[in-house]
Image (cartoon, rainbow, N blue to C red; front, side):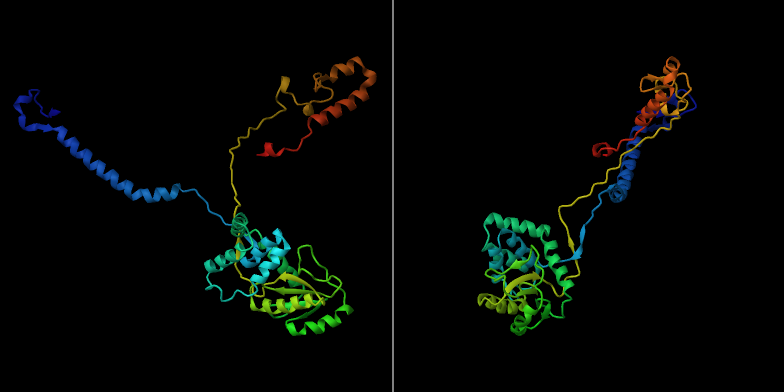
Length: 330
């Protein structure tokens, strides 16, 4: 396209004023395109951050973290008490069997449990450990131990209320045990197989897999085999982890619905939308749920009081607010 700028209509007399607008517009368009690309490259990180509306939340428990070994033992206890005690025997003291990392600790637990479970049950155990499904159960034993006013040691026994951190004091405590009442046993307590319920009850508070547990466990099992004691195990972590337990499988959804409210003065509404609660008793219309009380009072003046009571009942039942259902609230 060629445009001629000249005061003279005869464009042939001024050829020097002719401008090639096609090449000019192409160059201008290229510069504008480069400018737009530059602006978009500068604004794209900002816009992507502003458009992100995702909110990540975590849900933690009120209790502190519990050892996975104890949680695995509770999983086996649900299978059977025999498997629980087999697991206890195999994990009396696992210190030195792993390098101390969380990964090695977890793999050791899975390996030890795998010897007592099928492949399907082992997968269920891994799933339960990932969800921390038995963390609350383990901590409940720790709460029971806290009511016993535990002494300053990693493991201790309670024989009818008398506590000791020394395994060698067990014989002495067993002799004096009949003088004291037996402790209350809970449904979830782990009773060692073969324990004589008529013998003194020895409750061991210890953490499975620690040296302190191994010392007491060996002494107590020998006393049970001799028929001198009833052995009960309760989990106890002397120095619990201060971290909280992160729960999995929980979600929160925030749904905000736009609600529009319309103010309406029902005292000014006429016709079929008349509200019975705002109509006077002497109003000539005076219709409540299909009853024309104004006309009824005219036809039956002797029933004025009865009609008044009926009208009152109908008005109250009309204005009664029923509670919303869940689906209505949603």
